[in-house]
Image 1 (tube, rainbow, N blue to C red):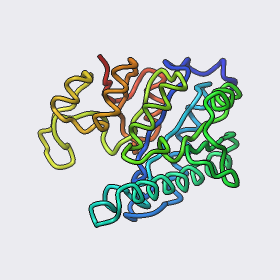
Image 2: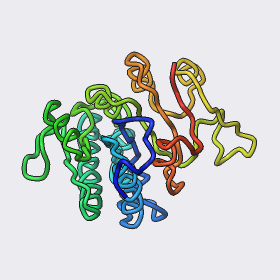
Image 3: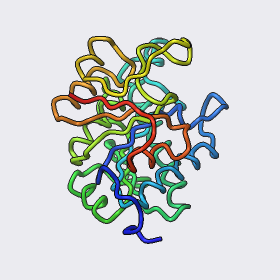
Image 4: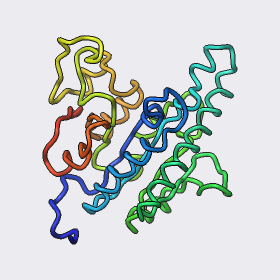
Length: 243
């Protein structure tokens, strides 16, 4: 089937943000290869629609800077360790995607030329135009910034039309649906409400940056097979965070 025969996606260029914890499956730590491969299958299915895909993956499955800091480690050092963890996850995802014949580039905010490319905006845009998936690693390259903020920053720089935030649940709820059976899901919610009600979407810096750049955030379940592709094709269950 050619790309012209496939349903026309609602966005041409998107950012997919997933947490490092999403890669560890049921084992509770590290990388779970079947889970990485499952996510790679989802990305490939969207790539085949002709969508240009950027990705940012957290590092919490390997090391979380904030937790290291809480245990007495100097915060800046802990954050740099967390950035290195995101590079490991990015390389794992690149390997899984290229095993599926999806050309992929890892671009790091911290130069490490022997394992990936340095982040250069114009080069990254060119990769996307050549139908390569771009995985942005090492956050913003600065401590005290989360990968949520890095994803929003890179999405803005790449002129993405939306951020897709893959989570354990199928949208934004007024309280944790994994703990409260009466939790209510929103179809749409404003940036202001996310900040005022402290809804668990992204950190405040990322939400403010998305709001300032008019960048919608689509929260969906990463565990629902075909969910990423379904939303782009006009179906699925999700929450849109916008103005």
